[in-house]
Length: 515
Image (tube, rainbow, N blue to C red; front, side, top):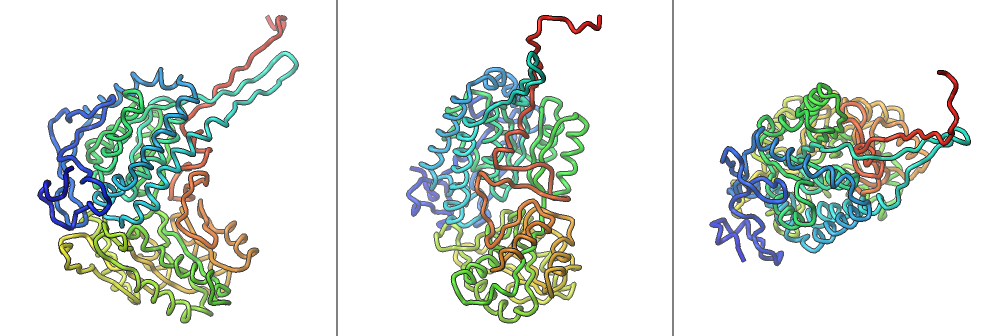
């Protein structure tokens, strides 16, 4: 069994306590047509772990030729896969879910080493939800039915769902395996073949997954091509050989993806940025009870996954009548967030996914101070001295300011929350909706009517009510405004990967009489 030691890596990257081997091979090619293959250029790039920035493996640096090779395989596989029975496709998705579940610690270790997130989140959230999504889509397709409309007694319109064909998918670095599941599960369930490009910052964990599940699928049905955005992502997104593009990432890149899709007149789903408000009304403090404790946890959710979540509750709106008392308790909760080696089960706040992301967050910390925001806690890089000195660590940070500041308007994608106050419901709504984005939001109140009214008026695709950061497979997810186009998860997602065929059939033997 390979260990961090046999790979020449520091003890900080030891995963033996999870009772799994070191998850990565030294080098990964692309996964095309049911096997791992060398990149056609022979080029690889180094993949560092954000925990220590040690190189944990090398990954194929693909280009357009590799993308085309994957598309060749997908197109060859599609005629058969698209006609594979729903029962068989369903059973394969169930088998994938079972294998992920059986190897949850191994895949979680890969995810944490690749991304820097706490291992407890990788196990309890990322991989558990990955299992949930494959099982959900494996189940929901068995329950689907077409429809028939009676035009008249002898003429009928049959509506049949058909896969669009070969789809291109580009996933982000914040939830590598879960975002893959969000896209791959419905695409395969609908009968499509896939060419997927993982983020270059986290390219390796999905290769571990393919080592486990690759032989469950016919060759060419699911292909993975790693590499950089301009070299591999752009050729995939702009290819005339894909019938649909699905992308999760930042809004600026999403605009480019949509341009490519528009040139080819193909559908696109985009899950983009966010600047989510998390709103706390004064009645949350009517009692110091379990619900209020849940509210404090809800405030602190900005630190989940190091704040590298598109729906991160990065704007906290506190009703001014309770501000002082609420924030005293909330800051105490934030100060209890433990930051250490992400591979330790007790660690709550891990490492940012890349040096570039860490530096971006740091620049916003400096910007917030220059804008006049008050630092209530944190505000700088974290210095960890247990073999983690070279890792990408940022302190959990709470700013106080106003919604006009850039730290309130621009997506930081780090463990940073900007806090402001509001007088009443009307002002809370005005502040909440004063953003280019509309992906997520949170509302906390003991008043059911107020919760419902806020939920309807907030311009966001998902409004968590008295909860936050729940992502079940059967709840639709997607954005308003510049947060994206289309939806992820839920059975409605299947229709993003299908076309509706209408068979209009006449059972009347008599001519119409026009000619």
